[in-house]
Length: 318
Image 1: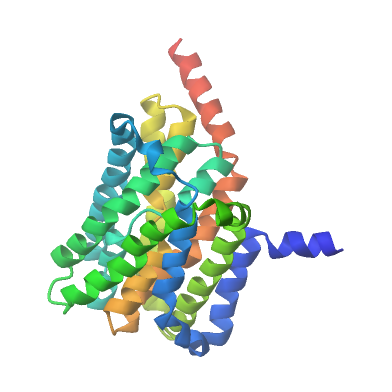
Image 2 (image 1 turned 90 degrees about the vertical axis):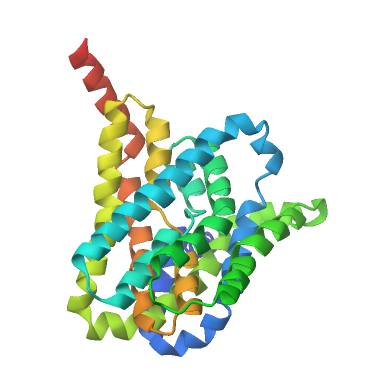
């Protein structure tokens, strides 16, 4: 009985669903947490990256491809398509800013465990995601400045936020590799990250609850855009890479890198830099759909299906 309860309380999907449900139940009652979300998110990044040694980036030559691919697909390809769809399909300035924030957001750290669980190329994912988050120190504020239009964003506030949620956590992650505490961090990393993300998801959903309820029809367009980016663009990339005979493991990693943006980062940026709660809505939708995406991909047995598709193509060509 105790083992079953422990397994439930440490199950990532259960924890994420609790966070989403708590946000919907408590609504604005969890709004007080929004001032702490940058620190919570920073802790998530520090704990996540603590398992990575920057020596693994050496020699730099071997790391250029995964880092370059990650920056290309997660920032430029994803950003161009989602902003193009937002420009075509919505005339709400707040939603546009919400999509700009998502475009500026680094790839999700969750790509690493998801890639491992789905039998992707773990080494490619780890190097790409770490490099992509470091690149976010420059690319995130640059994207916001280029596409936020007339929105008033304080460069100082942006720099302060980037420092809190990217620069300091990456530096702190090196301290967490200290031998006396690394064993504990390594053992408890997954559960720490999952419960901290529960707090972020609960806060974002809570703040956005009334928007979901009272602007359901208006929210359908952002929902449709993000749904397409996850499932539609992910499938298209899979088809293209499969036709190019890329290995199934690399297809999985690249697919996850393309579609999985850091929902917590996007939410914290939207909450911290903009007063209009509607700006947070696209990030809130992203937070809801990420666990759904992972559950779907897990149940599809992605690696097995990709290998079967490649075998069929090779048999036809032979």
